[in-house]
Length: 405
Image 1 (spheres, rainbow, N blue to C red):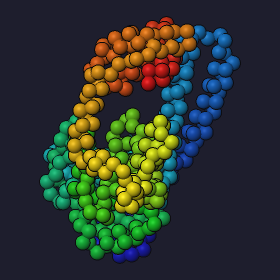
Image 2: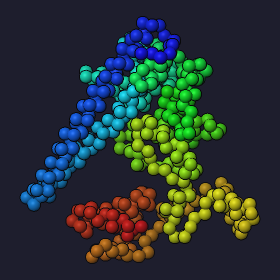
Image 3: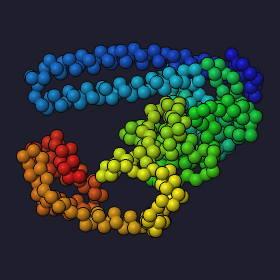
Image 4: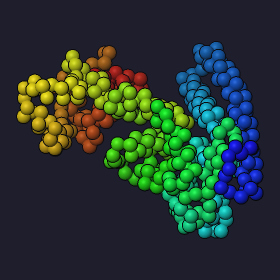
Protein backbone atom coordinates (compact mmCIF):
# COMPACT_ATOMS: atom_id res chain seq x y z
CA UNK A 1 0.00 0.00 0.00
CA UNK A 2 1.23 3.51 -0.82
CA UNK A 3 -0.05 6.37 1.32
CA UNK A 4 1.05 9.31 -0.87
CA UNK A 5 1.69 10.02 -4.52
CA UNK A 6 5.04 9.00 -5.95
CA UNK A 7 6.92 10.31 -8.95
CA UNK A 8 7.27 7.02 -10.88
CA UNK A 9 4.90 5.28 -13.33
CA UNK A 10 2.21 3.03 -11.82
CA UNK A 11 3.67 -0.08 -13.46
CA UNK A 12 7.03 0.51 -11.76
CA UNK A 13 5.25 1.38 -8.54
CA UNK A 14 3.53 -2.03 -8.54
CA UNK A 15 6.92 -3.72 -9.01
CA UNK A 16 8.35 -1.73 -6.11
CA UNK A 17 5.46 -2.81 -3.85
CA UNK A 18 6.02 -6.47 -4.79
CA UNK A 19 9.74 -6.10 -4.15
CA UNK A 20 9.13 -4.52 -0.75
CA UNK A 21 6.68 -7.25 0.28
CA UNK A 22 9.12 -9.97 -0.78
CA UNK A 23 11.93 -8.30 1.16
CA UNK A 24 9.81 -7.94 4.29
CA UNK A 25 8.87 -11.62 4.09
CA UNK A 26 12.51 -12.71 3.79
CA UNK A 27 13.46 -10.53 6.77
CA UNK A 28 10.66 -12.02 8.85
CA UNK A 29 11.80 -15.57 7.97
CA UNK A 30 15.45 -14.74 8.68
CA UNK A 31 14.58 -13.33 12.10
CA UNK A 32 12.63 -16.51 12.88
CA UNK A 33 15.51 -18.75 11.71
CA UNK A 34 18.10 -16.84 13.73
CA UNK A 35 15.90 -17.00 16.83
CA UNK A 36 15.77 -20.79 16.54
CA UNK A 37 19.54 -20.93 15.95
CA UNK A 38 20.16 -18.90 19.13
CA UNK A 39 18.10 -21.34 21.16
CA UNK A 40 19.99 -24.35 19.76
CA UNK A 41 23.36 -22.61 20.04
CA UNK A 42 22.77 -21.69 23.69
CA UNK A 43 21.90 -25.29 24.53
CA UNK A 44 25.00 -26.51 22.66
CA UNK A 45 27.34 -24.11 24.49
CA UNK A 46 25.80 -24.98 27.87
CA UNK A 47 26.22 -28.70 27.16
CA UNK A 48 29.82 -28.13 26.08
CA UNK A 49 30.66 -26.27 29.30
CA UNK A 50 29.12 -29.09 31.30
CA UNK A 51 31.23 -31.62 29.37
CA UNK A 52 34.45 -29.66 30.04
CA UNK A 53 33.62 -29.41 33.74
CA UNK A 54 32.84 -33.13 34.10
CA UNK A 55 35.95 -34.28 32.22
CA UNK A 56 38.59 -31.70 33.11
CA UNK A 57 40.60 -34.07 35.30
CA UNK A 58 40.87 -36.64 32.52
CA UNK A 59 42.07 -34.29 29.75
CA UNK A 60 45.64 -33.17 29.19
CA UNK A 61 46.34 -29.39 28.83
CA UNK A 62 46.72 -29.54 25.03
CA UNK A 63 43.38 -31.27 24.58
CA UNK A 64 41.75 -28.83 27.00
CA UNK A 65 43.12 -25.80 25.10
CA UNK A 66 41.91 -27.23 21.80
CA UNK A 67 38.38 -27.79 23.12
CA UNK A 68 38.24 -24.35 24.72
CA UNK A 69 39.35 -22.79 21.40
CA UNK A 70 36.50 -24.59 19.62
CA UNK A 71 34.04 -23.32 22.23
CA UNK A 72 35.33 -19.76 21.91
CA UNK A 73 34.85 -19.92 18.14
CA UNK A 74 31.27 -21.12 18.65
CA UNK A 75 30.63 -18.21 21.00
CA UNK A 76 32.18 -15.77 18.51
CA UNK A 77 29.90 -17.04 15.73
CA UNK A 78 26.90 -16.85 18.06
CA UNK A 79 27.70 -13.21 18.84
CA UNK A 80 27.99 -12.45 15.13
CA UNK A 81 24.57 -13.98 14.53
CA UNK A 82 23.16 -12.01 17.46
CA UNK A 83 24.55 -8.80 15.99
CA UNK A 84 22.95 -9.55 12.62
CA UNK A 85 19.68 -10.48 14.32
CA UNK A 86 19.56 -7.04 15.97
CA UNK A 87 20.20 -5.31 12.64
CA UNK A 88 17.46 -7.27 10.89
CA UNK A 89 15.07 -6.53 13.74
CA UNK A 90 15.84 -2.83 13.35
CA UNK A 91 15.10 -2.79 9.58
CA UNK A 92 12.11 -5.17 9.60
CA UNK A 93 9.66 -2.34 8.86
CA UNK A 94 12.02 -0.08 6.89
CA UNK A 95 14.44 -2.33 4.98
CA UNK A 96 16.03 0.09 2.50
CA UNK A 97 16.10 3.74 1.51
CA UNK A 98 17.63 3.81 -1.97
CA UNK A 99 18.41 1.86 -5.11
CA UNK A 100 20.42 2.19 -8.30
CA UNK A 101 20.55 0.35 -11.58
CA UNK A 102 24.21 -0.29 -12.40
CA UNK A 103 25.41 -1.46 -15.81
CA UNK A 104 28.95 -2.82 -15.85
CA UNK A 105 31.42 -2.87 -18.73
CA UNK A 106 30.06 -6.33 -19.59
CA UNK A 107 26.64 -4.67 -20.23
CA UNK A 108 25.11 -6.70 -17.39
CA UNK A 109 22.58 -4.70 -15.37
CA UNK A 110 22.29 -4.99 -11.58
CA UNK A 111 19.49 -3.65 -9.42
CA UNK A 112 21.10 -2.58 -6.15
CA UNK A 113 18.90 -1.84 -3.11
CA UNK A 114 20.69 -0.07 -0.23
CA UNK A 115 19.86 -0.22 3.47
CA UNK A 116 21.37 -0.26 6.95
CA UNK A 117 22.51 -3.88 6.60
CA UNK A 118 22.73 -6.62 3.97
CA UNK A 119 20.11 -9.27 3.17
CA UNK A 120 20.35 -12.40 1.03
CA UNK A 121 17.46 -14.47 -0.31
CA UNK A 122 17.27 -18.28 -0.21
CA UNK A 123 19.50 -18.47 -3.32
CA UNK A 124 22.11 -16.15 -1.78
CA UNK A 125 21.20 -13.28 -4.07
CA UNK A 126 21.49 -9.81 -2.57
CA UNK A 127 18.10 -8.29 -1.80
CA UNK A 128 19.77 -5.45 0.13
CA UNK A 129 23.35 -4.17 0.19
CA UNK A 130 24.80 -2.57 3.31
CA UNK A 131 25.22 1.19 2.78
CA UNK A 132 28.90 0.76 3.64
CA UNK A 133 29.61 -1.87 0.96
CA UNK A 134 31.79 -0.75 -1.98
CA UNK A 135 29.05 -0.82 -4.63
CA UNK A 136 26.75 1.30 -2.43
CA UNK A 137 29.19 4.21 -2.76
CA UNK A 138 27.79 4.74 -6.28
CA UNK A 139 24.54 5.93 -4.72
CA UNK A 140 26.37 8.75 -2.96
CA UNK A 141 29.15 9.62 -5.40
CA UNK A 142 27.55 9.75 -8.84
CA UNK A 143 24.74 11.28 -10.84
CA UNK A 144 23.36 9.30 -13.78
CA UNK A 145 26.11 8.33 -16.21
CA UNK A 146 29.67 6.91 -16.08
CA UNK A 147 30.84 5.71 -12.66
CA UNK A 148 33.37 3.52 -10.86
CA UNK A 149 33.82 1.99 -7.42
CA UNK A 150 36.69 0.38 -5.58
CA UNK A 151 35.89 -3.31 -5.03
CA UNK A 152 38.14 -5.93 -3.36
CA UNK A 153 39.14 -7.23 -6.80
CA UNK A 154 39.96 -3.75 -8.12
CA UNK A 155 38.25 -0.77 -9.75
CA UNK A 156 34.87 -1.66 -11.31
CA UNK A 157 33.68 0.74 -14.02
CA UNK A 158 30.24 1.13 -15.50
CA UNK A 159 27.23 3.40 -15.64
CA UNK A 160 24.45 4.45 -13.25
CA UNK A 161 21.23 4.13 -15.26
CA UNK A 162 18.81 5.03 -12.48
CA UNK A 163 18.89 6.37 -8.95
CA UNK A 164 15.80 5.99 -6.78
CA UNK A 165 14.92 6.91 -3.21
CA UNK A 166 12.25 5.52 -0.89
CA UNK A 167 10.51 6.52 2.26
CA UNK A 168 9.07 3.46 4.01
CA UNK A 169 7.10 3.51 7.25
CA UNK A 170 5.76 0.43 9.05
CA UNK A 171 6.35 -1.74 6.01
CA UNK A 172 4.49 0.60 3.63
CA UNK A 173 5.80 2.77 0.82
CA UNK A 174 5.16 6.42 1.58
CA UNK A 175 7.25 7.95 -1.23
CA UNK A 176 9.14 6.59 -4.21
CA UNK A 177 10.99 9.02 -6.45
CA UNK A 178 13.83 9.08 -8.94
CA UNK A 179 16.42 11.75 -8.27
CA UNK A 180 20.07 12.72 -8.27
CA UNK A 181 20.06 13.12 -4.48
CA UNK A 182 19.84 16.90 -4.62
CA UNK A 183 18.60 18.46 -1.39
CA UNK A 184 16.67 20.94 -3.54
CA UNK A 185 14.21 18.13 -4.29
CA UNK A 186 10.87 18.99 -2.67
CA UNK A 187 10.12 15.44 -1.56
CA UNK A 188 13.60 14.94 -0.13
CA UNK A 189 13.20 18.16 1.84
CA UNK A 190 10.08 16.64 3.37
CA UNK A 191 12.03 13.50 4.32
CA UNK A 192 14.78 15.57 5.92
CA UNK A 193 12.31 17.78 7.81
CA UNK A 194 10.76 14.73 9.45
CA UNK A 195 14.13 13.85 11.01
CA UNK A 196 14.17 16.78 13.42
CA UNK A 197 14.59 15.58 17.00
CA UNK A 198 16.29 16.32 20.27
CA UNK A 199 18.78 13.59 19.35
CA UNK A 200 21.00 13.47 16.30
CA UNK A 201 19.79 11.08 13.58
CA UNK A 202 21.67 9.01 11.02
CA UNK A 203 22.06 10.57 7.58
CA UNK A 204 22.63 7.44 5.46
CA UNK A 205 19.89 8.41 2.99
CA UNK A 206 21.22 11.96 2.49
CA UNK A 207 25.02 11.59 2.54
CA UNK A 208 26.57 13.94 -0.02
CA UNK A 209 29.59 13.19 -2.22
CA UNK A 210 32.11 15.17 -0.18
CA UNK A 211 30.84 13.65 3.06
CA UNK A 212 31.07 10.18 1.53
CA UNK A 213 34.73 10.71 0.63
CA UNK A 214 35.55 11.46 4.27
CA UNK A 215 33.42 8.60 5.62
CA UNK A 216 35.02 5.97 3.35
CA UNK A 217 38.60 7.26 3.41
CA UNK A 218 40.94 4.37 4.34
CA UNK A 219 44.08 5.89 2.81
CA UNK A 220 44.83 8.61 5.35
CA UNK A 221 45.64 7.66 8.93
CA UNK A 222 44.59 11.04 10.34
CA UNK A 223 41.75 13.19 9.04
CA UNK A 224 40.79 16.72 10.11
CA UNK A 225 37.33 17.92 9.03
CA UNK A 226 36.71 21.65 9.21
CA UNK A 227 33.37 23.40 8.86
CA UNK A 228 31.02 25.89 10.44
CA UNK A 229 28.59 24.92 13.20
CA UNK A 230 25.79 22.74 11.84
CA UNK A 231 27.70 21.73 8.70
CA UNK A 232 27.56 18.02 9.57
CA UNK A 233 31.06 17.39 10.96
CA UNK A 234 29.85 15.26 13.86
CA UNK A 235 27.45 13.26 11.66
CA UNK A 236 30.28 12.50 9.25
CA UNK A 237 32.55 11.43 12.12
CA UNK A 238 29.93 9.04 13.53
CA UNK A 239 29.16 7.56 10.11
CA UNK A 240 32.89 7.14 9.55
CA UNK A 241 33.09 5.16 12.79
CA UNK A 242 30.23 2.94 11.56
CA UNK A 243 32.02 2.46 8.23
CA UNK A 244 35.31 1.51 9.89
CA UNK A 245 33.50 -0.97 12.17
CA UNK A 246 32.16 -2.56 8.99
CA UNK A 247 35.41 -2.37 7.03
CA UNK A 248 37.97 -3.43 9.66
CA UNK A 249 37.31 -6.98 10.80
CA UNK A 250 38.97 -6.79 14.22
CA UNK A 251 37.69 -3.34 15.13
CA UNK A 252 34.87 -3.23 17.68
CA UNK A 253 32.91 -0.37 19.22
CA UNK A 254 34.72 -0.87 22.53
CA UNK A 255 38.01 -0.05 20.74
CA UNK A 256 36.81 3.43 19.76
CA UNK A 257 36.87 6.46 22.05
CA UNK A 258 34.97 9.68 21.32
CA UNK A 259 36.02 12.90 23.04
CA UNK A 260 32.94 15.06 23.57
CA UNK A 261 32.89 18.69 24.76
CA UNK A 262 30.42 17.81 27.52
CA UNK A 263 27.90 15.21 28.72
CA UNK A 264 24.97 16.96 27.00
CA UNK A 265 26.70 16.54 23.66
CA UNK A 266 27.42 12.87 24.42
CA UNK A 267 23.73 12.32 25.07
CA UNK A 268 22.79 14.17 21.88
CA UNK A 269 24.88 11.89 19.63
CA UNK A 270 24.17 8.67 21.55
CA UNK A 271 21.41 7.62 19.16
CA UNK A 272 23.35 7.63 15.87
CA UNK A 273 25.44 4.46 16.05
CA UNK A 274 22.58 2.31 17.45
CA UNK A 275 20.39 3.62 14.59
CA UNK A 276 23.08 2.37 12.21
CA UNK A 277 23.02 -1.05 13.87
CA UNK A 278 26.28 -0.61 15.80
CA UNK A 279 27.00 -0.54 19.52
CA UNK A 280 27.84 2.83 21.05
CA UNK A 281 31.53 3.55 21.52
CA UNK A 282 33.19 4.73 24.70
CA UNK A 283 32.71 8.46 25.26
CA UNK A 284 34.35 10.92 27.60
CA UNK A 285 35.48 14.52 27.80
CA UNK A 286 39.15 15.33 27.44
CA UNK A 287 39.14 16.64 31.01
CA UNK A 288 37.70 13.40 32.43
CA UNK A 289 40.18 11.41 30.35
CA UNK A 290 43.10 13.37 31.78
CA UNK A 291 41.76 12.85 35.32
CA UNK A 292 41.78 9.09 34.74
CA UNK A 293 45.43 8.94 33.63
CA UNK A 294 47.06 11.78 35.59
CA UNK A 295 46.98 10.26 39.04
CA UNK A 296 49.87 12.11 40.68
CA UNK A 297 47.72 15.20 41.29
CA UNK A 298 44.58 15.51 43.38
CA UNK A 299 42.69 17.36 40.63
CA UNK A 300 43.03 18.43 37.00
CA UNK A 301 41.76 21.88 36.13
CA UNK A 302 39.08 21.95 33.43
CA UNK A 303 39.25 24.36 30.49
CA UNK A 304 36.23 26.28 31.79
CA UNK A 305 37.89 26.66 35.20
CA UNK A 306 41.11 27.82 33.56
CA UNK A 307 39.33 30.43 31.40
CA UNK A 308 37.46 31.73 34.44
CA UNK A 309 40.66 31.99 36.43
CA UNK A 310 42.54 33.63 33.54
CA UNK A 311 40.00 36.39 32.91
CA UNK A 312 39.61 37.05 36.61
CA UNK A 313 43.36 37.70 36.54
CA UNK A 314 44.16 34.94 38.98
CA UNK A 315 46.82 33.43 36.72
CA UNK A 316 50.26 33.74 38.26
CA UNK A 317 52.56 32.64 35.42
CA UNK A 318 51.06 34.32 32.36
CA UNK A 319 54.18 33.66 30.25
CA UNK A 320 53.77 29.92 30.89
CA UNK A 321 50.10 30.09 29.88
CA UNK A 322 50.98 31.87 26.63
CA UNK A 323 53.71 29.31 25.91
CA UNK A 324 51.37 26.34 26.56
CA UNK A 325 48.89 27.73 24.01
CA UNK A 326 51.51 28.44 21.34
CA UNK A 327 52.75 26.31 18.42
CA UNK A 328 56.20 26.18 20.00
CA UNK A 329 55.10 23.77 22.73
CA UNK A 330 54.09 21.24 20.05
CA UNK A 331 57.61 21.19 18.59
CA UNK A 332 59.12 21.01 22.08
CA UNK A 333 56.91 18.06 23.06
CA UNK A 334 57.82 16.18 19.86
CA UNK A 335 61.49 16.84 20.55
CA UNK A 336 61.08 15.62 24.16
CA UNK A 337 59.33 12.41 23.10
CA UNK A 338 62.17 11.68 20.65
CA UNK A 339 64.66 12.27 23.45
CA UNK A 340 62.79 9.88 25.76
CA UNK A 341 62.67 7.20 23.09
CA UNK A 342 66.43 7.35 22.74
CA UNK A 343 67.58 7.99 26.31
CA UNK A 344 65.01 6.46 28.66
CA UNK A 345 66.48 3.96 31.16
CA UNK A 346 65.40 1.80 34.07
CA UNK A 347 66.73 2.98 37.41
CA UNK A 348 65.47 0.10 39.59
CA UNK A 349 65.33 -3.68 39.53
CA UNK A 350 61.90 -5.32 39.28
CA UNK A 351 60.57 -8.48 40.90
CA UNK A 352 57.60 -10.70 40.06
CA UNK A 353 57.06 -13.37 42.70
CA UNK A 354 60.51 -14.99 43.19
CA UNK A 355 61.95 -13.76 39.87
CA UNK A 356 64.27 -10.74 40.06
CA UNK A 357 65.29 -8.83 36.94
CA UNK A 358 68.07 -6.26 37.36
CA UNK A 359 67.98 -2.78 35.88
CA UNK A 360 71.07 -3.68 33.82
CA UNK A 361 69.17 -6.55 32.16
CA UNK A 362 66.17 -4.35 31.57
CA UNK A 363 68.25 -1.64 29.92
CA UNK A 364 69.78 -4.26 27.59
CA UNK A 365 66.24 -5.16 26.52
CA UNK A 366 65.50 -1.48 25.93
CA UNK A 367 68.48 -1.29 23.55
CA UNK A 368 67.52 -4.54 21.81
CA UNK A 369 64.05 -3.25 20.95
CA UNK A 370 64.99 0.41 20.50
CA UNK A 371 63.19 0.69 17.15
CA UNK A 372 59.82 0.21 18.85
CA UNK A 373 57.87 2.99 20.64
CA UNK A 374 58.30 2.97 24.42
CA UNK A 375 55.07 1.24 25.44
CA UNK A 376 55.41 -1.33 22.67
CA UNK A 377 58.90 -2.04 23.97
CA UNK A 378 57.57 -2.60 27.47
CA UNK A 379 54.99 -5.07 26.15
CA UNK A 380 57.61 -7.05 24.25
CA UNK A 381 59.96 -7.05 27.26
CA UNK A 382 57.16 -8.21 29.57
CA UNK A 383 56.35 -11.03 27.13
CA UNK A 384 59.98 -12.14 26.98
CA UNK A 385 60.41 -12.05 30.75
CA UNK A 386 57.26 -14.12 31.26
CA UNK A 387 58.43 -16.70 28.70
CA UNK A 388 61.91 -16.93 30.25
CA UNK A 389 60.82 -17.16 33.86
CA UNK A 390 57.67 -19.27 33.42
CA UNK A 391 58.77 -21.94 30.94
CA UNK A 392 57.40 -20.25 27.84
CA UNK A 393 54.13 -19.22 29.48
CA UNK A 394 52.66 -15.73 29.08
CA UNK A 395 50.46 -15.96 32.18
CA UNK A 396 52.61 -13.42 34.07
CA UNK A 397 53.07 -11.01 31.17
CA UNK A 398 50.65 -8.55 32.77
CA UNK A 399 52.48 -8.71 36.11
CA UNK A 400 55.82 -7.93 34.46
CA UNK A 401 54.27 -5.15 32.39
CA UNK A 402 52.81 -3.48 35.50
CA UNK A 403 56.23 -3.59 37.17
CA UNK A 404 57.93 -2.16 34.09
CA UNK A 405 55.55 0.82 33.95
